[in-house]
Length: 262
Image (cartoon, rainbow, N blue to C red):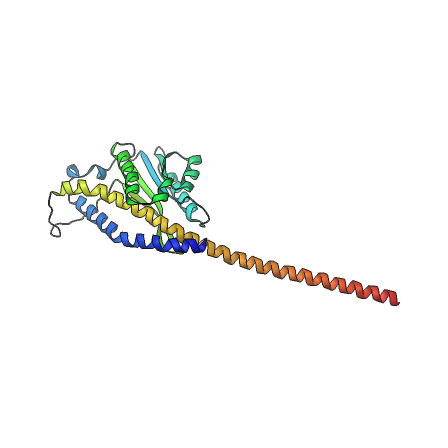
């Protein structure tokens, strides 16, 4: 399992490393651009509302044997609910069977997209993002959060709790003098924000996918080391017990021989 995860990790790591610069730059551009626009000209996805209903998108894996990878996400998503003021309803969208299994018992799972890992493409993730944007624009939820593992390296994953919607403009952001806008900024924002949100979700799932294989590879390596250590300890214990049994048998034979001679 360690070798299989190591092979899959390389491909997943290359994918997330390649898309991060584009996703980060697109998000920064939109945040700065939104900050230069008035409240009346902003997108529906930048509207700040009184938070009464929150949707937490918990991104886990479909399989276990990857250490604390899934437990950390479930704990962070649960803490996100516990830290809210009373009267705020929290629902969950599960991406991964482990999240669905956990929150189906203790929370309200409004959707389960565990099958997305069977064909992890931007087009399939975009459908999930469209669902999230639709729920927010219709007013079903006032805030949407992403909870996932950010990939750093094979041995390290960082639990992230990110605001997904509404999109929060950067205070004091400015793009004047850096860009020429054609068509207007309002039309650019209305077209690019959905694309940026789809990219952000795709990046989060890709991060989690790479983190999963890194965590499983590390977990299987530790399991192998622990099993080897346990085997060596049991082998030493067995040899000691065997040696003691042989010694006792020799003493019994010697004692019996002396008794006959006496």
